[in-house]
Structure formats: structure tokens, C-alpha cells
Image (cartoon, rainbow, N blue to C red; front, side, top):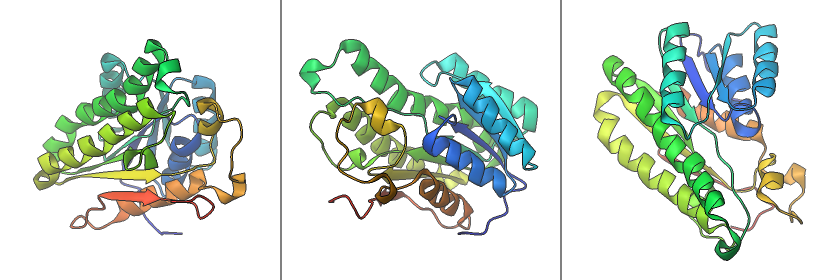
Length: 244
């Protein structure tokens, strides 16, 4: 495991109530970062915050629907009011629906684009002025293997995740000379509730063989812990049980 000291950092994490977001929050808090836990399921967020505080860390819970711009603006402002700075923004909120496009409702199209892409764009935009004013900061966006591959019955999700990768790379070119880095993690099968929510009936991989949320957290920490002159652009991650 990588050794890192984040005791002078503040990390904001969307989608922190479960899965990769929660694992990143635990890992970063364990390295000393003060963490802001954002999401919709307040009971889970409060339980995670209590766990982090019980271990000696500092955590703030903020209710936030990432597809609502005023709420994302409010998330950033509450984080600054509480901790005075934001060093890392992790956009981990996301979900997919396993359906052919013909069977996908307009509401399901809208919600997947709103959460997976628009919400991520909002999170990046909301922290930019602050990071630019300090000429430092890191943004970590959670993409998917769907950012670089195509899959039937996942057309809307794959489209949104392709957009995440293109957006993130373009944003990095806009801000890299201002001391801001933008990383993208693109995992394949991860052992989280995403699988169940998406509607998989027969998962072909054993849970223990899939990428674990803690694995993602470790790679997120690796990105953030790199020296300021090194930028990790995109990492595509495959479990060995899944064909590439």
C-alpha cells in the first residue's frame, strides 16, 4: 500500500455513501485528509462520517444531488466554509441501467446523463475558481471501461462515460498550466452495488475476482500522491477474471 500524508489536504467526494466513493473517503481520511462526504443517502453518509471521526479523522456530511447545479455550488461553499480550502475533488457519483435503448425510458436516459456526465461537469466547474485562485488542486473523475469500450444494452451509460473521458482530458489541457491536474480512473467490473442496481441477473465473475472498491481507493491515492510535476492521465483497470 502506498504511504501518503494528506494531513494538510481537504477532499470532497460525491457518491460517498457507498462503493468507490466510500472507499476513497476512508482511505484518504486514513492518510489525514479532512473529507467532505456528499450524496443523497444521508443515513449512510452519517454512518461513514461517524466511522471516520471515531478513527480520529474529520468529516463533513453534505446532502447533494449532483445533477442540480445550485446544490453542487452549495456543496463547494459549505466545504470552504467548514475547512477553508479544497485540494482534491473526487467525482464518484454514477450508475448505469442495463437495457437496450429501445426499452430505455426517456427518464432513464436523462438520469444517466445527468448523474454520470452533467453532475461530474458541475463538480469540476464548481471547484475551478477556488483551485485557480490557489494555483493548485487535483480533480479525480471516475470513468469506466465503458469510457474506452462499447457494450450492448449499455448505450446510454457508455455514451455518458465516453463523454467523461473526453471532457476530463480537454479540461486538463485548459488548467494544467495553472497547477491543476485532472485524473480519470476507468475500471471494468467492480464489486459494488452498481452490479445489482444496473440490473445484472447472472454476473459471470466471482465477487472476490472482481476489482474491489478498496483497490480503486488505492489507485486514487496513487494519483493524488504523485509529485506536482507528474500527471496520471487515464488508468484503465481490468480484473483478471474479465476478458479485455
